[in-house]
Image (cartoon, rainbow, N blue to C red; front, top):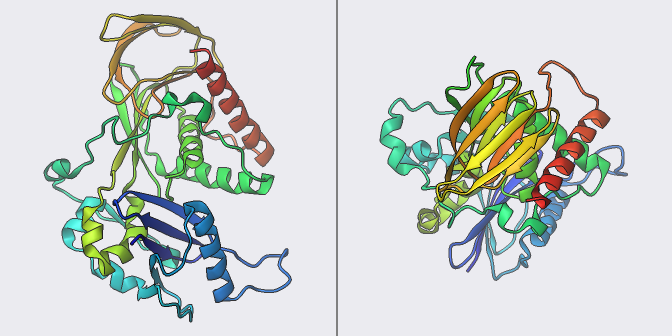
Length: 355
């Protein structure tokens, strides 16, 4: 029987659907909140009912007696349904063992309780626990270009809310250090408490993180996906066997990013001897699909820095060469931010269709 595990927090809910074959999908859904458009303040039951309707639509399932539902919440919702089991949020997190905490890397308890990072001094010991990144497990979006997920939000309001939230994460969560030369590749791991399981959010998050780079250089991008803990905690408490059968990816390799504000002449040499030559004008973005297991040699010729070579690996977004000028201090209006996103998407899609 499928299991729907929900972490119900103030303002949003994380939901994990586990099917009988242990395949799963995770989403994060904003809750219905009262504002000037509501004639009345919705009750707790109305908010929960609205959430369940949204989840049925997203997961394409019927929330009835054929599915088990586990919910953790700090609020008494006063809801009594045979197939819904409620448990206290603090109890669900106390049920996790120390190794669970180490595996997930941090504890997201949601609502006003905030986010707590757990520092682990023996990271070398944890290497064996990390997700084995391979093409078989992680989707390469470039294989289905017609499905490339730059989906348009339903309304301007949806766009502004999503874009503002992702830009906030990109600016505040990405720890990027300045470095003077292109000799070393800087590895950057992005961390977010929002579930980026849906394709649109992942793509927008990636492009906003690239836009947040103000230091020129080579970057290797990874996404810390350890925020699955919130939605999976009730499952761990109430159906631990199912929880143990799930293999959550901890790190998702996004790809390599070259950030140089200059005109470039480039040559990509693959391991089979094939070469791809191209030029990138200053102010443009170039993308090259490259899987997780592949590595290429990129030869660059820049007016500013001369010629140099770099061996790079791929990822979900492959290789991205960004030659736009960016300012880390400029404050953009909502319309300017929207135009920036639109320009990035159009440039990327134009490049992909020309491959």
